[in-house]
Image (cartoon, rainbow, N blue to C red; front, top):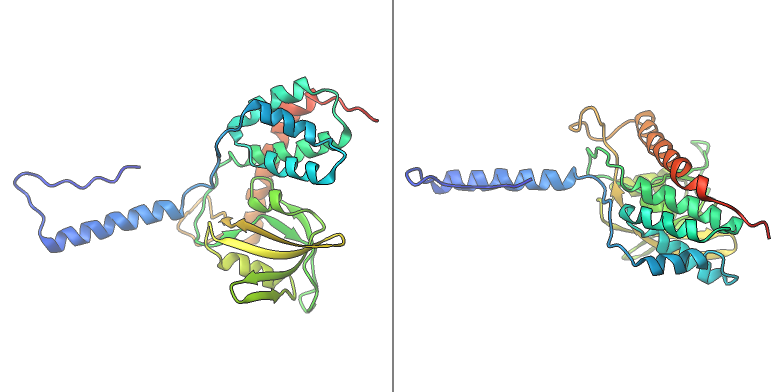
Length: 257
């Protein structure tokens, strides 16, 4: 959208009116930025690199597999046709490669799906194991991630959130609500840092918050209730699954070695 301010030859705005007009324009620009769709693309990487990364998903070295997985999660949705060609040329795949590729394709495709954002709240796209509302000092356990949102690439199901990392140091997490409130208080794009337990390792993970989905029927409403948010996320998951089944699943031949 373009924002253009002009003055006619015979109609010069007074200083007061000009300030009001500038203020209105800036407000419109900020509103568009706050309500913008989630980012959908990144710079494309060469096909040769995509091929090497797909091959690395089968590397015996765990760190190489992890590097390849994380790098492929950064693909642009525009790279998916190239990835499809690489998959065609890389058959048969090991089961671990096929599993990783499905996660990658679901996430990268879902990033291309726009959504309404009606709030300034942050969002990571994670689901926690339910807790009793009176339960305290129970570290949240991640049991689901939503493709297209940042946590899908950065976190894993089964990760346990131990603390937030703040400028003044780690803050221990006591329950699910504490994490949910902390995420919502973040602004879209703000870097959030978590200390998590993944199996027997303690890791620190950083990621920029996505904009929290808003009410698609009325973008003026500040946020959506849980069941509406669930519907929005489930629709994205369904579209991503359909894309995988129609474009990639028919290409996959696994080697059971």
